[in-house]
Every structure is written in C-alpha cells, then in structure tokens.
Image 1 (cartoon, rainbow, N blue to C red):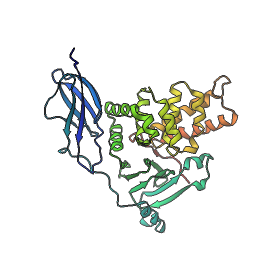
Image 2 (cartoon, rainbow, N blue to C red):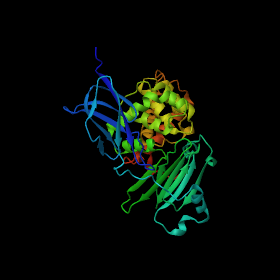
Image 3 (tube, helix red, strand yellow):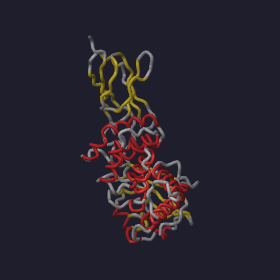
Image 4 (cartoon, rainbow, N blue to C red):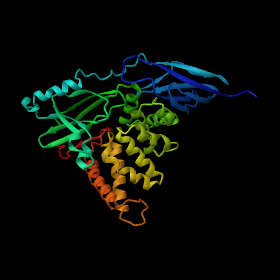
Length: 375
C-alpha cells in the first residue's frame, strides 16, 4: 500500500543584523481549494498529504511572503522548501549609543537644568516590594537622565523608566531577557501620546513580541504552541529564552490552550525568580485549573518578585487578588489563609486595582499612567 502521507520543512533565508529572526509562522494551503492543511513554524516539520501547495510565511508587520512556485509533494516525501526573504525590507535592530554608565553620568547634571517639560528617571530594583513593605526602600534606586533611549543589561534587579510631566507620573517596565540586553526608546508627543519601542537582542523574541503587540492572534498562537511542545526540557536545559517562554504562556492562557503547561510554568517560577511575570502566569494557570489554595499561596510572593513587566500579568494578579480577598472571608473557601495572609492578599488587591486602572491598554508591556510617584 502506497503511503500518501508526506512532510515538508520550510527554511527561510533572511537578511542578517535585522530585528526579526527566521522563527516565523508558516501556512500550507491546498493549491486548488486554498484550504489551510497545515500551520506551524519555520524549520519545524509539518505533516501534510501528498499534493500541490501554496506555502506562505507571515511577518510581524502583517506581510505575507509566498514561494514563487507551487510546491509539489509526492507520497512519502520529506521535502525541504526554501523561502527567500532577502527582498523584503526587514526593520533594523534598535540601536542606542547610550550605555547604562552614560545614563548614570547624568547624576552630575540634574535634569531640571535643561528646563524640559518632561523629565525622565531610571528606577532600578524592586520598588513594589518597598512600597508594600516586603523589601527595604534602600533596595531600589533612582537615577535622573536626559536620555530617551537606553541599553539595559540583564540584572536580577528590574529596571523601570519614570516619565514626569508636571505632577503626572508614568512608569514603563523594561523587560530584559536572561543574560541579554534590551534597547528601549521612549518619547512623549505634544499630544501626550507615548511612543515606545523595544529590541530584546533576540530575533525570535522580537518577532514574537511584535506579533503579540500588533494583535496577530493566529500567528501568535502558532508560535506559542511550538514553544509549548518543547518548553519543559528546553527550560531545564536553558535552551529556551525565559522571556519568550513567558510570552508564549500569556498567549496560551489567554486562549485557554493550557494543555501540558503545568511543569514548565512551575519551572519558570523556580528557575527564574527575577522574572515577575513567571509568577503571574503560574498563579493564573493554577486558578484556571481549580487549584485556588496553591494560587493564593503564590500570590503572597508577588511583592517580593516585583511588578509584572507585561500588561496581562497586572490583570491576572489584580483579578485573583480581589477574588481571594473576598473568598478569604468565608470559612469554607478552602484557601487556607490565616488572618495575616488574608490582610496581605487584600493589600495586594488594593495595590493592583490601582495599577489595573492606570494601565495604558495600547501597550503590551506594563505602562502605568497617573499613579503616585515612586519615592
């Protein structure tokens, strides 16, 4: 009996030193019916029936790139399909000539001397813990700067940008991947609109982040499912970017695709204590799977871990904290919280309710507008 099944793997050719990588979503469509028969990620093997197909790659800016000719696949064939993107104008990586040490030099030149209507400050450390009494105020620092771009190197301490105009304060999280550098550029227009750009020094993270930021749902889910398939072992062996893993988890949880996420969300919390979003994701995952007592205990760790870098994390913590604050009053809630712990949950609920109402919903990273100054 002839085996009519086959497979194909798409190899992309992209320009070097560009913002995006070759890890892009792929669609395979029947050449006659134009029905999608397979969806996956470049360099991943896709199982398809023998036949003739259109093969396309989706870019984070919405462009679709197709093979020049119809791809013919014979029964039993394992075919490599090259797809060149050399003629596509990929965005360049963000570049900042300003290093962290450059920014710190601004200590000698107070920002106010420039008479700017907008002042900027770099905040380093767990300011949330200090605000909520889970850490000393000495554990975070403030550095005035005249910069509007910065290369932020990895540290176990988070970095935030404060933008102050008059008595209004806006705070921007700067996500940084493990042993990596994030280039961040920011600015405020005359109308008050925030312009914010990130480069995470990793093409796969950049392209995935751009899919999410531009709300390309199907493409983001394809990448997330690929991450899910390899996550647990890849995290243990530190072959998978923790930032990319967290982004994938956010997408999967958002669309209730939670199969096989238990081990790797637990490992993210265990292995990367500096990554606040790992805790937010784990809490939400446990809660959606009915493990509320465990989720409530982890919630108590939020002030020590810090404020989530991504908007969804703020929402998850706020929602669960408010739920458990209400349920904790009931003797049969099953949350197993004592009086002190319940008060801590209420404190978290109150704090994150303010954060949730201050979120800039046009940004996927955490941007808090109009909250009281981090002093």
